[in-house]
Image 1 (cartoon, rainbow, N blue to C red):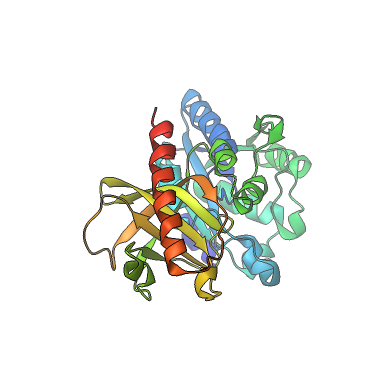
Image 2 (cartoon, rainbow, N blue to C red; image 1 turned 135 degrees about the vertical axis):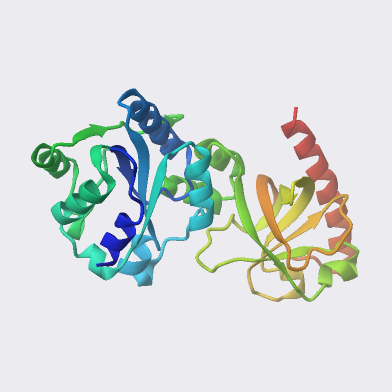
Amino acid sequence: MEIEQELASIAPRKETLLTIGVFDGVHAGHRYLLERLRRRAAEKDLLSGVVTFSPHPQSVLHPENQLPWLSNLEDRTRALQELGIDILAVLTFTHRLAQLSAREFVSLVAQYLKMRGVMVGPDFALGRDREGDINMLHTLGHDMQFSVEVIPPYTINGEAVSSTLIRQALGQGDMRKVQRLMGRYFHLRGKVITSDKRGRLLGFPTANLDLMPQQALPGNGIYATIVHIDSRRFPAATNVGVRPTFGEGMKTVETHLLDYEGDLYGKEIKVEFVQKLRDEQRFASSEALKAQIEKDLQAVEGVLARDSE
């Protein structure tokens, strides 16, 4: 079975304290749980570990209703490693894995990853038909001799932080709220691809990002952003939307970097979203659009200057 091969390949050197989940976005609530996991594991002389899944279970079980992801697997892995987690088990989520009972799944994890304890949130559930809720997890812990600790929800301004709440704020373009909930700027990472060069013709060349269709995006509009290229940072104005002035209709993410000269085609860049400047709008002429872009670039400088204070 594939899950056994994947678990067996990890072979932790000693017993572990684990948490299990998708951890989409590795947001502030996840970080709260993971920091407690890391500290508790150190107290008990255990390795801290995360069991996660790829692709997202929703995309396998309900492909007709896929959730847009806040972070791809590469970014999730990078974020988890930066938090100091000792081991990371990425399991391929398949229909076969989904049919495992909670007891079967937990038994495999306990066996191969030497699990001595598990730490989860209050709405945790796993296994076939999500049968493995907190009550069953306690039963399995008693039977298999591992501890179970349930961490209360992490709240900000009275709201429990969740990937769903972040997606809602993201769709509204409320990047300040997204930043609070994630504990950092929301970002997109992708390669720069060729475009129609319409921005260059206007005097404002843009980098057009190649993104997966499942990637969650901010609501349509113009944003003050920070672009990372290699180890350098550049202020930028980023458009998310359909470019209504030109009637094109396809959603794109394109960014104009201030103070940058050079060819970006084929390079991977990271775009951090700081604040929405305005909604996307249709202009009567290219000249009117150019005048607004000039204002947008001035606004970007003002926003980023205040944000760095």
